[in-house]
Image (tube, rainbow, N blue to C red; front, side, top):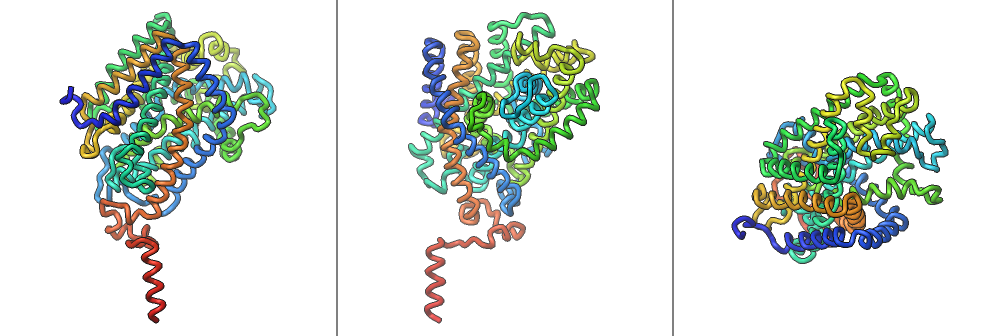
Length: 544
């Protein structure tokens, strides 16, 4: 056993593993009681503290804009001579698919259709009208656009300089080194990591459960295999084996190939729906909706419906934000791993701007096609969501287009691969983050990656088998609740990041600013501490 887990810091590994096990046991053994307590905590957080997590999301957006638009965006991760670990297209595709997971394949048709059927009261439009259709695209773009990706990208920006240029461990707590120093190696850092690891495990378990339900639904559409809990569990276990094997391969090997293939499927499906769907309408809808979205980004980011007209914000934005915040530190850490040899500005372009634009395209094509067909062609995609669940939406859309037998199977494969890419990145990053300090930033041992991959799959399968959707909902609730402490940690990481940047000459350990190309970035920074510099200036003045 010691050989298998050689290099693992057990004080980092055991606490979150034990706490996760306790939460799983409670969710399975006492689902109703757990649901009652967790729901009460969730209601309090969403109702009373949703605004706080909304401000944290805005902070991460500001971090991304700072990294992209200021002189610090020119800083090269890993030093002036660092080489990228893969070609740019593969970097873009793997970054996108590992962050996105099952998201757009699950929600791409469902969310716009649900807003179309039940628009926010604050928008003042009637359900199933053109006004509701326009409003639905605006909210879908908000939930899957620039602000959404600012969470994952921002979390990656916060740690990227610390792990690549400060040569600190591959952990989220490295971002707060400027605030606490070597205490990141002690209890402070370990409590920090424990919270983050616990939150991502709960988040990924609920996400993979959701993905398994979509795959099971696809099997029913494609092969008439009835979608049951047992089918979903079989999907989870089979996918668990596949993504664990992929996670054990080098990042620039199996993971890259899977990411490229996944992106190819996304592009094929989007082009297919665009060409065989209502093409002119989709173009006009995209232009109009994207223009409205750009005009309304500030109000969408800050509108928490203080008059509580219908609870729309609590049901959607205030629920999504903490769920994703709980996952963003570990996801951001993986994105930072992929970005060695790139600049901070390139990092933001690849991890916020590109994926946001792609998701906006996806939502406008899939959501727009679904709304158009229900509104003008008499299809019943919205009704299918009511009867069979959100996971059926995209399959029902494909059924209304040419070649449904083929496209439903491709959609099913795309969902399965998306399931794979997210779990692969999480398994790899969890393994890296529990290694001892002296292990450095090497590839984590395969047994440790395998443990986390298997643990995630087994946890999700057991939850599904024991309590079905309720157990998964309880785990999802736990991950949303974890979004609150993670939000506080992200604030600390943000403060640490700005201190890194404003003193980057002092913190850099890879010779970045010895290179003439980067010296202008630190022209206003001094080698000696500020008080000493001020005193020296005063001494010079007094001597004259």
